[in-house]
Length: 247
Image 1 (spheres, rainbow, N blue to C red):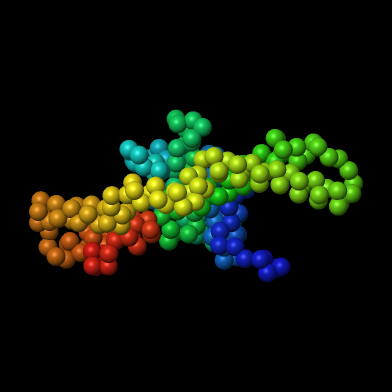
Image 2: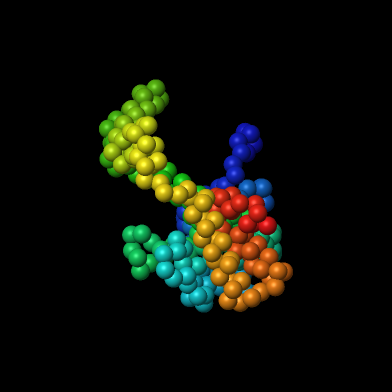
């Protein structure tokens, strides 16, 4: 930061994840998204009590079905006496892809973004970690060259990264249909019956009409329900709903 570098989010894994670290970074004007360490010694304030992340997870009702996350709760991080401040944050628990019986907890200091956005942003950090592991384990970043020449080390690193780029391009060509160019858009146009925006509006309008018919709310109650419902949607869905429906 002294060199003029800026960042919207600082992300790290459980190795650096502790309340003191999160508070200190937040006081520098940066948002934190990190993986929470499942330690009985690290606690957060939840509903007026100091609890570790396992206790918080066990005390709360989980989301069921095909939701991307199991749990989302607001907490307070840090002790004013020890850390200099206490800040608001959100803990989001998601299933561990490697072990469906296990779960992973993420903590985010930015309370303005939703749970899906927290998961998406942290996924970028995980992609970087996969990149480093691939370079070290499979592309011989560490083992292929040993020397004291800075220029030679830099050249070797550049060759390893070039190998990774070749693999990435090949992987995308093999898996991403968008790489076939104009044919992809022709295929999509043929398959599309209605646009995403249109289908979303149909579903939302049908839901609102059903609520009006069954529960017969007042206009004020209906407006509050609509605002609460729309505010919980991801931003791209909010933008897809027409202004007349969102009002």
